[in-house]
View 1: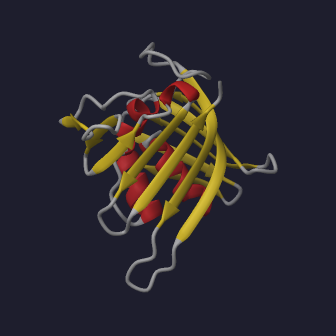
View 2: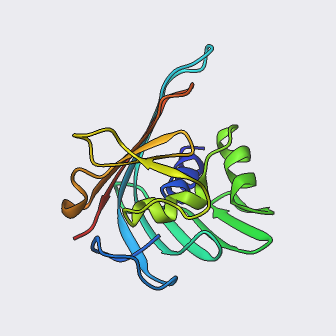
Length: 174
């Protein structure tokens, strides 16, 4: 379940090159470390998980692999219009789209399609955004604050304060 939660979160802030850079081709790859923390709410305990991720593609088409800190592949996913395939040790599961994956895995909607652009340090083109209040660097979009103060060092932090509060931290490989 932790691997699924991270896969969904990664697909949320889920794409790109091994170093932070300007937007590029849709087949860019990005890799790094990802940490997801979900606050406790309504009797559900707080959850936290960390993985290494390799992501290629974008919200429309792509693939991702999540690896444990010990190097074990925890989950792999590929998606294209109309289909998302998630592979784990237990087998394969199919979903019609990335939001359906998020709903199944996390039990709540997450903007997985936006994650690909967020990891690239830019707002997603599918929804309005606005800059964070100075002196913060970044933007707000879809109820998330995407902090880019350390973008040049490869760090991205996305926070959702609506219950349950979620914090996603990504450290892109340089």
